[in-house]
Length: 314
Image (tube, rainbow, N blue to C red; front, side, top):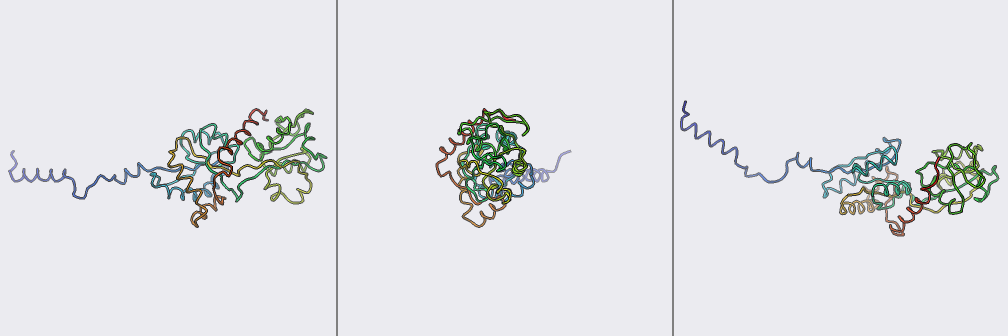
């Protein structure tokens, strides 16, 4: 059956109108396209308490994301790893953009992934800290030279103040170290045995109770956190060199312009009220450059990490 001429003309006109571009149309992407092209900034940390870390870090993550829109970043997320090995994998896979840690694990992470250490983090308002090597007065030990044949209680294998700094100090004082599984293990007369307590309070109690004659901790615990009556029962054998309290790492492959933008935002955070508000729950007062220069700082970090690499661990 033939369509009337008028109906045919109206059908063609309607089709042409539907195909024609709107006078207000442009090449601007749709909301869906914009969303699919936006980037998520992921900040990583290592902890056995993810909820606490996320709560404390998310304000910092949001602060950064809000100032990085020029790089297509629209939001931020906090990713918590259980341990150093997991963080290494996350950085290798590009699942974390930047993270924070003390100098020893940060150096190991950097060497394993190619992540760059870019800034210092003043955690708890402290830019640097050191380790304290101590013994109980009851042990009769008063000098480092008297430690061979005895056990020293350390914190954990990846701890900067609880392993790296005291181990390097003992090695540089020509003492031979050997990891032990228990404080009851035999220690040769020419070696200093060490065990891990995995907690500064455990270390203190083991030494005070006579399970081991000596231990190590960071200066905050020894000078401020430990009870005064407990410290009065101890003697300081040595205080180690200081190292940055924590550092900032960025993943390998992150474009240099974005890295520089992140550095500038972090360094300037403590200069604004919004920045200070975001830093407070993150237990940080500021970020800054390494005073001695980053190359010098990294060289010492890697030297120390290399020194303890061959130590027999428990």
